[in-house]
Amino acid sequence: MKTLLLPALPGHPHIAYAGSTLKIEQVTASAVAAEFGTPTYVYSRASIEEAAQRYRQAAQASPVHVALRYAVKANSNLAVLQLLARLGWGFDIVSAGELKRVLAAGGEAGKVVFSGVGKSADDMRFALDVGVECFNVESPSELAALNRVAQAAGKVARVALRVNPDVDAGTHPYISTGLKTNKFGISQDQAAQLALQTAQFEQVQLVGIACHIGSQITTVEPYLDALDKVLDLVEQMERKGAKIGHIDLGGGLGIRYTDETPPTPQEWLSPLLARISARGFGHRSIVIEPGRSIVGNAGVLLTRTLFLKSTPVKHFAVVDAGMNDLIRPALYSAEQAVVPAEQREGSALKYDIVGPVCESADWLARDRALVLEEGDLLAILSSGAYGMVMASNYNSRGRPAEVMIDGATATLIRPRETPEQLYASERLLP
Image (cartoon, rainbow, N blue to C red; front, side, top):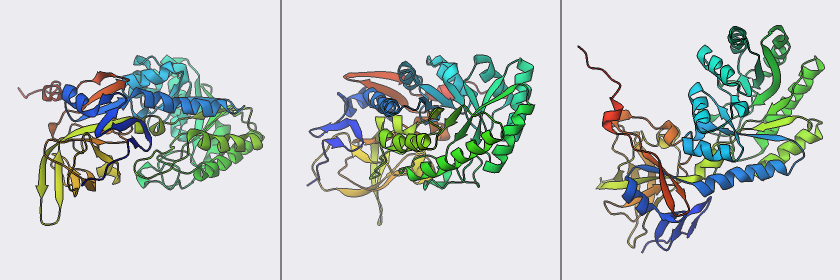
């Protein structure tokens, strides 16, 4: 006999079983697949909005002013950005393309922080033209380039220096950004010198200090360690005459994928703001840039089982989603829960969930105990962040459709790509 799953899936308040049937809010996963096909990313609007509101409530619980900036790289669908813009959020971007998405979704340029180590002159020029809130500068060369672009445009660029505090966030090395061996940020000593040098640039105004130490962090301690180093640096800078208006703490708070127990926004933000106030920095504006923790557990990837295949040592469930649709397992060896859209009776086998892409790295989950038949629909949970945004067209596969669930309504927010669309801009030789 199968083991019944809990009606509620931990960490997914609006994705749960009604009897043996998986539902996203009031819509069954099977109904979504029947209407829109598979593979398809499905998001719960209520989950996104509730997660965003938890950050707002945590921010409002403190006398310190906190500016909320959603990290667009986590999920950049226009409908997702539109929801957050309507809730009053600003945005953290890392490319001009993301900035254009924010503007197309109704976001305000004046509430956009432009991060990233490799901004081109065209990126800088466009951001200056639309009036972004701030550039998070990551090197002396970038600062000089930004000054040149701003001078040519006749504008003043507001900048924050992104500091690398050399703090181990205890996360996967590919998503760790706060160590001195990472490409991100400026060393503490270099930042102190660079802060004074900004006075030499007529078209650059230093307004803040920024720090981001990584992603999928599940404890508060690394943030506190980084914060103390940042506050020490601010004190050092201001003793030498620099003026720091805001402190950007970045984002990176983790979510539950399997059995993680990350802090809530309140549990994460409260000790940081308390430390800031205790050290006499409470009069400054604090910027935070959450991404994954807003959208991650709001999404699932629906995929259909094509074939069941057994070898002397393994059972495989070959599904129609592949590493091009969800690359986190192949790239990070990431684990995400996989559940059936319809629970069935029977003896469970341990399956590797694999896709149709021609790579041995094309796996989505390993050794999962499931009762399966060919044709069964599966849901890969916690797929709202770093899923569709990292999808590719490898093997000339169209990227999945995206659907937003709002109560009993399912809305297509991005259609599935067709093969013809993939080569429409290509040209045959004469």
